[in-house]
Image (cartoon, rainbow, N blue to C red):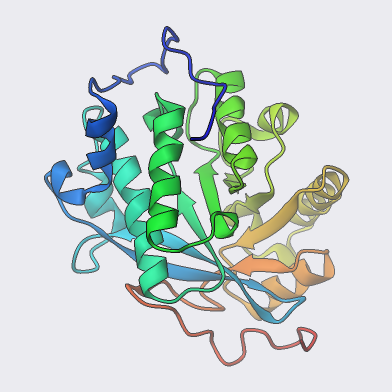
Length: 275
């Protein structure tokens, strides 16, 4: 059993969040999508390592059961089913990655405001990894910086527990949300993903270049790896590679593949060093 230290039975929860009542057995059922009242699945989009000229990870992106948009699913998530949805996503993403034979990391988005019993949240994930034979060290938990979390230190403690249990951690859309540098002061994830608005046309934007250069230097000092997301042009890729970023994601490399492993575009790694 994993011993966690951030569980606070009498803790106050983020504004607008309603914890569910139930037993451990109830929580073990949270990975079952049918309990939600709606179905969903995943598309997988690769994150490439240009330095090693290979795929580093696959991000699991929620989709409708027939490949519908993420919004068609997320619009059905509310205060009453958020926790169960978050748990079901973890289980289904891990199961899907295992069935597809993914040998790289898989990155799973999670909802920090859906966590109210961390020891049960992580236990469900660990059980799914064991059941499907997917190594814990190849699971990345990714949270969007734009998620408003009222209790910053509590959130940082949650992330530290994920890291302690062997999971990698990442902050998505860095530079676009509420947390920013304050979150980095409380917790240093394994990875941050630079928001695509900072990446767009960076090869021709001096302000974006200055921001990204300083961010890369800051992360290097804190031993945090940087992923640039939303790469659409070779010019963006080449500038960022020269700036010291070798992990990238975007349509230039591959679009998300519904219930399958995406194939990299033939020219995606052009200019990258050979293996």
